Each structure stands twice: as structure tokens, then as C-alpha cells.
Amino acid sequence: MPMNAIHRRICQSDDWARSMRSKKLPWAVGDIALDGDVLELGPGYGITTRWLAEHGGRLTAVEVDPDLAAGLRRQFDGEVDIHQADATALPFPDSSFDAVVCFTMLHHVPSPAQQDLLFAEAARVLRPGGVFAGSDSRVSLRFRIIHIGDTMVPVPPETLPDRLTGAGFEHASVGMGERSIRFRATAS
Image: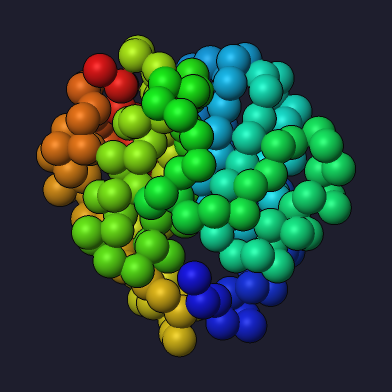
């Protein structure tokens, strides 16, 4: 999904990495077990992937952008199973993972319908009782400015639980942070 030059620079910055590692990722993941088979959707430049790789489990990542996927393969060199694929059509069998996560990428999915396909695919590849969790940004003036010229389809937090339930999840919930939302749902 397209990202402007400023946005790309932010997503590769040390400040962004520190913020993600120290605040956003621990808040988004909370007490979710990451020691089994974990799938990350949309890792981008790999800041979140590095954090996940340090928390145990067998990590697989799916990145839609071929250049970013190639960069992730070089960066993680066999440590993480990297696939270049679209998260709305995952290349994995049903019930393959214990957890599926995604961080600050849902707003780059080009439409609500495609976001719903991503949710359904996450539900499909999760084992029963598995958890889908992550975070995304809240809309603000700063958020809109950073995304000028980007694909930007915000995920309204008030509709997300019903959308996750509609995709086949149970116990869907959304929490609000200062600039982010976090969500959780359990596979049936």
C-alpha cells in the first residue's frame, strides 16, 4: 500500500522503534501468549517483527509489498518465515496459528471490505481459541498530515468489535489509548 516519503522515514526511525518497543507493542499485546505459532500481518520495515522475534514462538510474517518482503528476508535471514502475500488471501491452511497480530497497518488496507476480508482470513488461519490482536492509529490532524498521498482508511473503533464478530471471532474488544486503539478477538 502506498506510503509517502515522510511516512516511510518515520516508520524506519529510531524514535518510532523506541516508541513501538517500549510502549505500543507491550500495550497492544498485553498478556497474549506469543510462544506458539505466531503470524504477523503487514510488518513493513520489521520493527514490530524484531520485537515479536525476541518474545519466543515460531514467527511467520506476511508482507504485501515485494520490496519490503525482500528486505525482511535479508534482515531476518531464516529467523522468521517471511512470505510476500496479501493478508486478504493468506497462503496458509485453516487452523495454522495460535496467534495472529498486526500493528499500525490496518489503515493501509484500501477499503473496509478488504479490511473485513483480512479479519476473516485471520479467523480462518487461527486454531480454535487462538487470538487475533493488534493496534492501529486513531485519527487526528497529525495522523492525516503524515498520510497525505498514502492509502489511509481509518478503522472506526466503535464498529470494530462487530466487524470482528462478523468475521467469525468471539469476545471481540477494543481499548483506546492516546493515539492508538488496540483490539483482541478469539477464534471460534
